[in-house]
Every structure is written in structure tokens, then in C-alpha cells.
Image 1 (cartoon, rainbow, N blue to C red):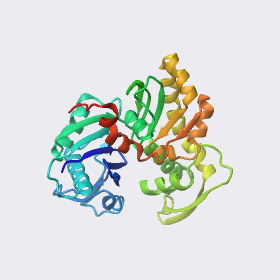
Image 2 (cartoon, rainbow, N blue to C red; image 1 turned 180 degrees about the vertical axis):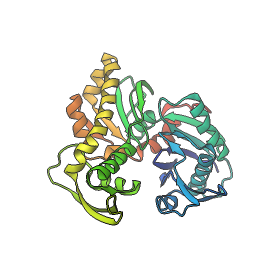
Image 3 (cartoon, one colour; image 1 turned 60 degrees about the horizontal axis):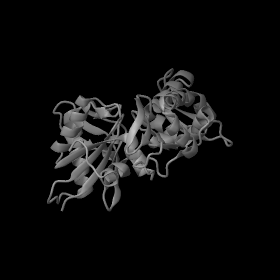
Image 4 (spheres, helix red, strand yellow; image 1 turned 120 degrees about the horizontal axis):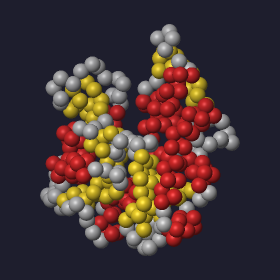
Length: 329
């Protein structure tokens, strides 16, 4: 039995879609490695739990940086592990795999992703631009001559594209995304609260109370970290209004990239976007107030896709069926 698999190979998470089953796996793109022997100790959620908590000889790494492969060998093993975990070990026939990549990926980076997928057991590999996959997964009809604007905010990159007739007409990929929100929070905690927090804690603050627009009701969270003055553990309360100005700086960069793409969009497609609105996808679309901020800055109705984190994986799995073709196979 062979399967069509769509993989959203993200900087922060990997999602696997199997035709007929939907999204069957969502795990962090983290690998725990023995520094001395280079032996892989854990992959995915198990490895994420080790972040910041490993002994000296074990390091937890992310083999993808800003949406592209930074460690080819580890990426290959990670893809193989996730494919086998999704399909089970009984593969009578190698699967066809569609993998999402940022729209401004270089040929060398494309080759690295392709080779990693072939080495992981694919019989055929198709690379799909993330905004195109996101549009398909969000349920937009991209094959008609109408303009659809997609803003896909992942962990390492934000892809902005205007799509018509199955392809991106105008697009850009910026290295400002979800991880930058986490880093901004960690910097703020260090500077204003004298508190050192790890990546996981910064992400938790973003998810629980993070916002880029004033909220009607104030949210707060208690977090623990290391006091930089005394060196001792300390607990502080963080509010949503504190995160607003911190996260707004990063959000403004994303909004700027959207405005830049709108300025380059042909007038007929601009009219379509004004009518249809802007669709936000990816984990960053879940950030409170981002749709409101973008709508205020652009004057165009903005909404997040239903289940925005899954749409890229779903779209990559449905790409061949929707467009009637395969790329880079």
C-alpha cells in the first residue's frame, strides 16, 4: 500500500497529513543529540521536553532554521522518524511526499529538502510553496483567476503571497515570525524584570497572555525563572498589557511585509483582495489582536483560518489533487 503524504516541515513544528486520514501527527521539530557520539537520543515531543534540561553531553537542537535545513543528516533522520511514526512500519510501497518550503527558498536549499525526503524513504517528492499550500488547506479556490492574499506566519519565516490561477503572483518571505515573538518576550523579561527565562517559558507567556492589540479584559500569568541579580529562582506575574508593546514591534515588521506585497500587486488582484480580505495562517495567526492590527493598518478585512496551524500540512497533502500536477518529482 502506498500513501500520499503532506509534510509541513516547520522551524518550530512538523505536521504530517495522510490522504484519507487528515493530520495524523504534530510534533516539535526538535532532536536530542549526544554531543560526543552524535547519536540521536530523542525526536519530537520527547526531545522538546529536554530543552534546557539536558546534561552537558546531550544537546537539544532544531535542525531547521528560518524554514530551511541547517543540519541535513539530522533533518533526514527526523523526516524518516515522523513518516514511519505516521504510517507505521509496514510500508509495502514507498510514499509520495509533498513538502512545504518558504517561497524564497534557494535552489541549494530546495535540493537539501528533496534529498532529505528521498533518503527518508520517498519514491516521489514534490515541493510546494507554503502560501499556496496554506491557501488550499484554508479552503480557498486558488485555481480561478481571482486574487487571494495569504499571510502564513510560521516559527522561523512569514510568507506573504497573492495567489491566482494556482500560483503566487507576488510574494515575499521574511525572517520575522513566531520565534521572534518568543525572543522579544525573553529580552523584555531580562531587561525589565531581571529574570532569565528559557524558550519554553517565553512561548508559554506568548500563548497564555500575549497580544499585539489592547484587550478588553486583562490577562495575567505567573512564571518562574532565575533572578539575574541574586542568581536565585524567582516568580513574577506578567500581564497582557506588558506583552502588547513588546510584541507590537515584531508584529509591525510582519504588517510592513504585507503592505510591501500589496504595493506590488496588480490593480485587478488588489480589488479582489479588498473584497475577499486577507487570510492569516500558521501558528502566528493565533496571536491575539494580530488580525485587528493588520486590518487597522491595511484597511482590508483580515481573518484567521480555521485551525490555522494545520492548514499548510492539509494543503500540501491536497496539492497534487487540487492543481492536477506534481512539482519537482
